[in-house]
Image (cartoon, rainbow, N blue to C red):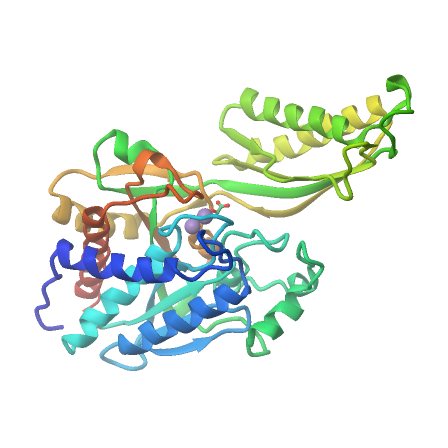
Length: 418
Ligand code: GLV
Ligand code: MN
Ligand code: MN
């Protein structure tokens, strides 16, 4: 590999931000950023990112679960690949940096290498995953799981909130049929690197532009349907009611209490639906979601049991039916110590001071690679720790520092591999 200098953080920051802004204009809700998995806006985002990948010198394909895969071969076309990436789907009313940064920064690195005619001793594969947020279907991280060799065909028959199965949505999206298992398992993949915004307040509080992730906490998701008895709001005496919404309210507070009282656990009910509600009807049925996480799998498993008991106790006391199902789980996943060392050296050379280690509270595509391929994540500072909100913000200067760090790490790995 001939000498190649990483471009300045200022240039990288400007290039990355221009593309983040362009992606932010692709949405299903005008005035907001809402780009759910397999939606029309996700399709438009794939088309745009595909054109960026091609312009950067990659060959591109869409896999059967709508992961966009760009490849830039190494100096030897049979060389193994280093994987870089993140996701281009979003939550509803999202920010512009979550996920997109990891994709756009990786494309910029390949673009620069290609423009300089530079090949590395390994190939680079850039992955733009589509199902990281898991907002539309019960399971999540399905694209990265398949790429890592963990495809579970049962997910194809899962139905989303709109009653459409994943299989139907994938066909409508234009995904090719076939086995989504990708060729980067075992021998041919070197590792996976993901740059992501922190989505928390730690780096800003300590005045640090970037940090190194130690591990990603495990998660359990579920849904619960409460069935009581609908009735007239004016005629049924209070003592004779089986109000599903009042029962759900007690359950929400019970889940919050378990989250507050259990060290190392966070527990959230983010969605509550009262189907067919009217102002003058006692709610007969309610549905809510559950999401709880811990860095320690035993803590999360114990919470699964305690939350179930708490929900069943409220249901029994209020004479309603509770159908709780845990629909998705992923264990805590540790980043690779060797890749962490490479990333630390790269970050120190860019930032010129020791770099902080921190765990990830949010889930990421990187966790799909646990036990399959070494992976490492780099975090960049988020303003006020805000994410999953239009107020999400990372400065152009920090975007540049983070992209320069990722670039440096890729080149350092290339040197070690030469
Ligand atoms: C994704 O942002 C998640 O952690 O749920
Ligand atoms: Mn994300
Ligand atoms: Mn997110």
